[in-house]
Image (tube, rainbow over the protein chains, first blue to last red):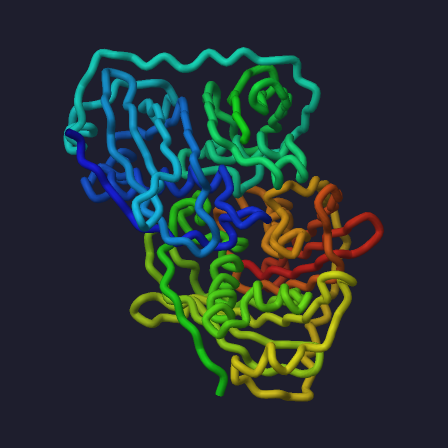
Length: 242
Length: 242
């Protein structure tokens, strides 16, 4: 059984929206911080990887939200490697209230990138072994999202503060652009219950990104999102709202 | 002597830029969190003020930076009310390393706003008394910035995540737009030493903001910034870089 790693996090006001709840981009930031901390604790952090010319890249997020923590709350943030195979590493994340109630659960797929060629590379054993997770040949298939027609699009210029240590747009910024396609009244009156997000192509400093949005009300209220860098589809998402 | 309030803060990767240092907008967020925490501890927090129909608004920041904390570092963040008069409250903030080295010092001017009329209102005694700071008739004059001609301008659409609990653009977002007028090479090769920032008019959700930038190299490298909402000057800044 893989090692589980838990950190406490107190939710500051600046990670929350006007309703006082942790924002979706900050949910990802707070969770991913825990996997960085676990990697550091096992001496497999960014410095170790950089020396090997490698970096982790996220290809998929599947997030289930029961509730979002609020300003000032102290929560337990946990992570654990699930399984891995030659190219893919699967990792689970959770946020629990201090009394143990599960707020949300994220399943993330990571691949390993050669920092110089920016190409996919096999995960070396010495990187993954300390996490004590199970090797499994099973490759997880991403949910195939059926997109409706898009009726809203906005352009974003990449900002300096959008870039992370991998020198590309941080994956939480895509989610910020996606949510920005929905309006204030909608966002203050709805809460995301489920987020499925895929990352296809990197976006760099100096690029412009085009974000398309469609909102569909059937049994559930669902928003669909695509982000393009020129002709290339860069990221897609489906968000189910309650 | 006014009560001093200190909190520890561990700098997460998502508050840092590609160089691994705390970003300027996050410096403001982290500092201001401490004054909210002190207000809460004295039962003079946002809830207390909201019941009175009041809210704090920042009109000026003067920031002196010796060094910026780095990813993973634990710092001490402190605040203390300085003096106040009928309309203005002056407050000091500091970040120190764990070993006591002063990294930066911020002096901020606050006014009180009637949340309904959105107009300036006198600071009630019952709001300020618990901070035990000195009443002084002395009104601090803001540094008069001499602006050069601007050669760069960019437009920003206000995002949902730019809005704070006062229902206007959070003051740290202005700084994000200002910095965005400078380029990647400049920002990775320079560090802000001094930031003077004034806030004149609020910007709301749905607005567009225009940010003008000029970079001047004389004895020091200095950047100048103005943000407009339509014809109205909304915020100005001067940043000295080292």
